[in-house]
Image 1 (cartoon, rainbow, N blue to C red):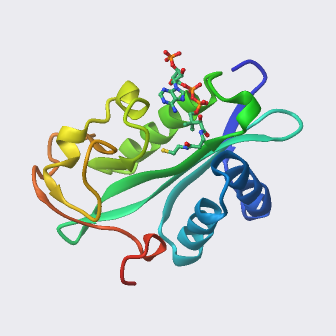
Image 2: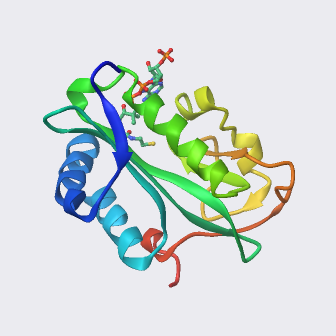
Length: 165
Ligand SMILES: CC(C)(COP(=O)(O)OP(=O)(O)OC[C@H]1O[C@@H](n2cnc3c(N)ncnc32)[C@H](O)[C@@H]1OP(=O)(O)O)[C@@H](O)C(=O)NCCC(=O)NCCS
């Protein structure tokens, strides 16, 4: 990741983040989720990877309640510009983001995504399967960040994901 830096997103980045998500996913849905999480105060971290000219990647973390307690986090959406994928930008964003979630005292992090990608960072479908959640199956993965993490429970996702506000 030579000459690439990672920093927290600021409000002025919203348009670029939207365009990046549109380009990486091919639909505007993910950009809408990022905007809604910020509006609702459910964003825990929004990080940008950039060079000296443009934004190259973005990762979003958001709050998840576990048994009603504000101790969990969700990862996503995340995106890297198509021409720079598979060059380590996603890895850099996940590593910094996970360190921040640990620093914030988040006990578990969940993700719904590529089943071949997130296990590289310690996520496992077995961990996520222990919880009642809107998602299930091999693409729904979790990772424990604390030995105090509840071993079972119910996950409440933010309104940005279609859950009741
Ligand atoms: C998925 C995505 C965020 C990964 O970011 P990236 O910068 O390309 O990933 P990295 O270069 O950090 O990859 C780290 C490792 O994962 C591998 N990898 C990358 N994308 C992968 C994928 N979709 N599935 C499996 N492995 C993948 C890389 O080859 C690399 O392997 P290595 O450790 O053996 O070298 C990016 O490809 C992307 O934006 N895709 C389109 C949008 C999307 O699908 N977002 C995620 C939704 S779950």
